[in-house]
Image (cartoon, rainbow, N blue to C red; front, side, top):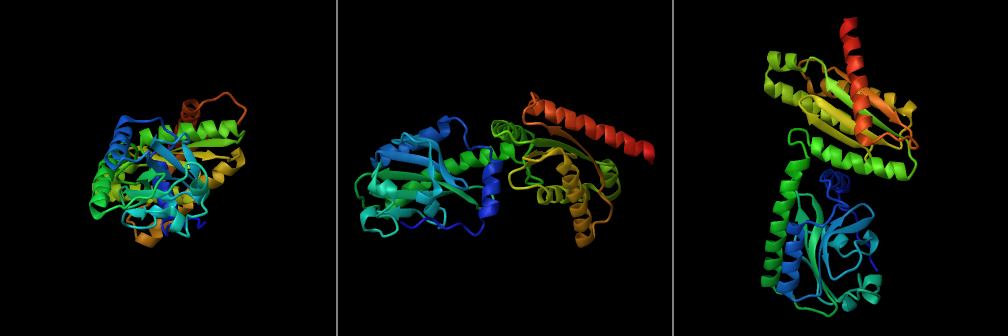
Length: 322
């Protein structure tokens, strides 16, 4: 068996998949409808919308399989996202990459697979629309075109979801995306007994940047700060622009004494980007945080409210000190 390789853009691909806030969500009719249609049109027992996560493939929509996910190392879809066109295995038993795959030698006894990569904004391939059969198939050019058309319907659904959860200016999660992702991360950390921290940040005198240099420079300042925040936190953390000049982050498995260094890294990255780009003015910000003991009873919303309150306390103290 040949396990799928990682795409060259794997880190960015996973980041965009995570920011969609679609993993581990309930079934939705637009995705289920396309899967039902694919099953009927191609007369196969199994049809899936498969999203390829770091170590698994998770099924947003599924007909014909009892499982909601399988390991990425045995997945056909992990191979499919490596190419640009429809990935087809007409008979797995004669393909050395898959002949001894446990999904071929055991249930569901895959003999035929066709998967069309699903792309989101930026061209990142996050998964596939795929059809599977327990007997070999010939898959003609017309069949491939039909599968591509069905995948196009799903890509439009994903594009709408992207717009609903991602801030278009900075590429960070927006308020809705942050709430969905943050609550998931919060629940996971609580189950695993991990410490967490919530950060709230607000640019200082942002209106003055807009008034002095124009809104294009103001937008550039927001993007610069977003880039700095993205570099300062880890991949497992959740960063967002909540709106205007308000930003936030949820740090998972982060003790209280490690939060201030994260804020300091954001400041350092901001200063570095200003020096590198020749940005015309300083970008200052106030940040507060709430440390969350994994055994505490606080919830996500309460933690963010506490971080926000601390941020405004520090902002007012900075104003008073000027």
